Image 1 (tube, helix red, strand yellow):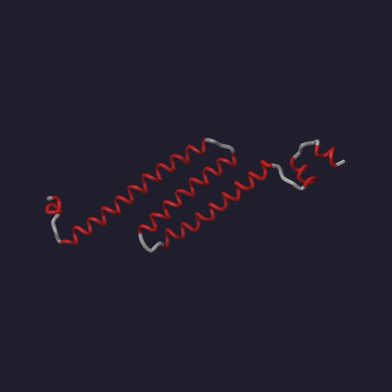
Image 2 (cartoon, rainbow, N blue to C red):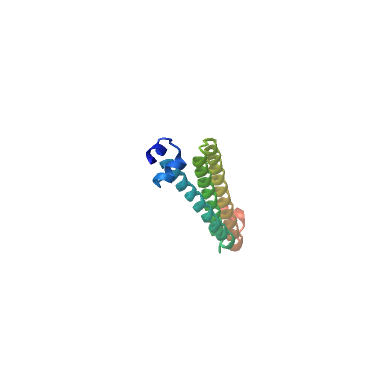
Length: 128
């Protein structure tokens, strides 16, 4: 009788009879575990961004948050079988990279400006 039930090819019946899941279902479960793990890590990075002792730690945490959001978008696109979400992930990655570079340049220029002002020298004297 169990052989007749297996011939129906219904995944729920097959799992109930044999006790095993299909490869597709187990793959989707793994993707969902990865997705929820990334969400948990995202929460830890938010804490790091808020509590970071220096601005560079906060910048690194924000970069990690952007990276995890990209991974979450790609994992969700894989679970839902939607390729158009990968385009959004690429655009988000590019904007995150450009934003990180500009913030790092701004912070380094601000730091150099403080050094120049602290020396008591004029900007024109430093350019000579």
